[in-house]
Image (cartoon, rainbow, N blue to C red; front, side, top):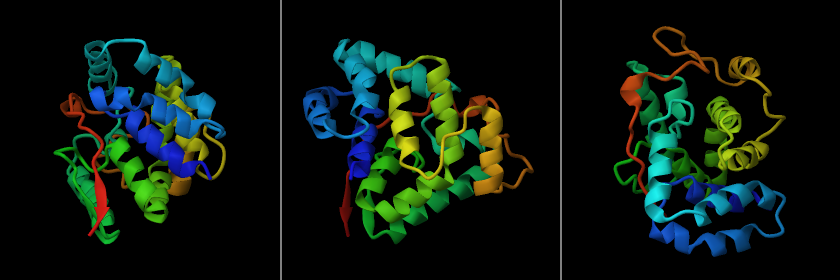
Length: 214
């Protein structure tokens, strides 16, 4: 089954680039070889092999930390600068605690997509539930990456393909998905697809956390 490999590879290539990531690209490619999603990772692997580390890090900061269209924090798309965001992030932490895994966030917020994907590798049931619950955020990120022709778009398509049903084709269809999957209290919340609140721009990107059984 290719889903754990997909999640592990996606967690790595969506993380802030470092020497360790660049040194592992051949291993990632070999692990993906022969899986249905191998082609979806070709562009991002080529991107990571095509520039020096400083250039890659600058690209990541610009596109994922500073861009409102490519936020890797799942609650960023829904909560904005509201009182509910802290409560929602606390729910992520509770899921991690309940799993019996020790999660070192490294100072990162618990809804950071690479962290959620890593968690899904180690706890497939709870991880899949989190990804399905926050699928609208994943789909909006996918749409933004596709519209801007970023090499990471295929990675999001691969992630979304692991979840039940077809991906929405538009932001309007994502809104319909929200209503079907995750009814959200509307008071004080940014609607799905709206520009996230600028107060949350520039979140630090940290290496993928290590998880182990307690």
